[in-house]
Image (tube, rainbow, N blue to C red; front, side):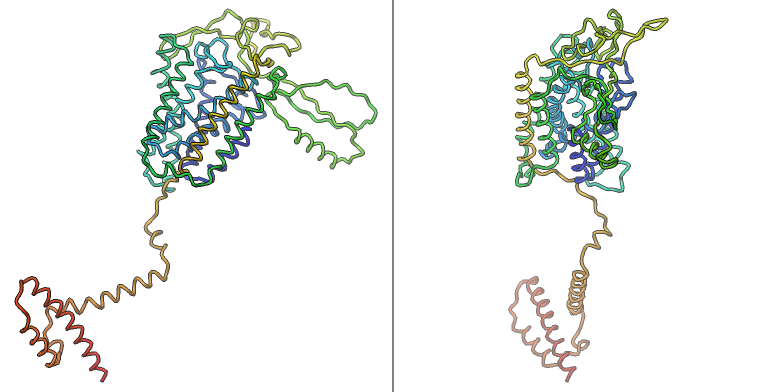
Length: 530
């Protein structure tokens, strides 16, 4: 699902181009920091991905976490909020709320299906909804809000409003700065609101998270109600683009998973598929039935394609049976060790204690257990000198406590959030495009040769008509060789004029002189040809 959504987002980014492409790069940088930083800081190491085909950072982060999750949710939220034409201080909260609307059903379903596991006794993650920490939604909204704010401020300081491809280093530096600083600015929002209420006054994380998201939503609604930009209301366009298709694909996939998935049959481990060719006809084979783990998903179409290609290569008569053997390898989870060992962790407001290891016989994670492990509950390793924590082991999914409750929550989120996102996508303006800076020499060459020729001819005619008029004030009749009959006629007209104001007389004389000189010039030209 994320692979297809990421492909749609990548195509939309390529189609928009410009600063939208740099924004996607900034979200990728943010994804690397968001996924790697908890691995390097022990106090933040509270999250374990299920291993995938390609994993990074010590096989802790799969490929889709670096190039799928954050680009899909963050970029969709960024573009949809851009269509609302909100001011900069409202864009950040808008992106934060929109990204959480896309993230929430994904996190709930992923936790139940063992796409990742959480730390058992961390105090920050103690308050949960369907075993998903409320704090995770708070922190993600704060990160997306901080990302947009830093991106806007850096572009206002370092760049112009118009996009200039010659300033590519600055264009890349702005999203780079946003990707790096957004994680730390989100911690400032955590220290201002979350830590005092949760750590000092003991307020539940659910209340604090809903309070933050409500404040974000209120800012967006008030700003949108007072928005006078005409482009924010133009809805006469084809709105179902790549972003809308990705939203429909995500919500449909998650809803189908809740309806048909069986969490109790899921094993969080690495499953390797090996293909064997069997040339014997009547041999009896005893094959053990293995189940696919949640880390590698192989479609039946891929298996059929491999089988069909093998038949073409080796011939139909040579191969009678195909055997797919799946070998299981344990995944990485919270280390299992002594139950009594504690460690101190520092938060923004105080210092807390938590268990350093997962106690396999006494833990509070109802979304997994060890019922599918052949040897029972795993234990820590026993070396010759000391015991070592067990990081690689298998966990098993559990049944739904109430499937109808999951269906209502996920279905309600998909329906309500889908309506809100539809209003943002279909009833708002089109995606704003940044103006491109044009060069002077390029702008001069845009006119056609015919337009330049006509403009030059008009300029020459204007100069030809103005020149005699400018010299009329100083020319005399002897210099112009005006005939005496014309000069006498002009004198008679001047005698019969009534005295008026000096200004009016001057204007009338100048008009007459210009007209008379033009007529005399025409007479002279006619005489010259005789």
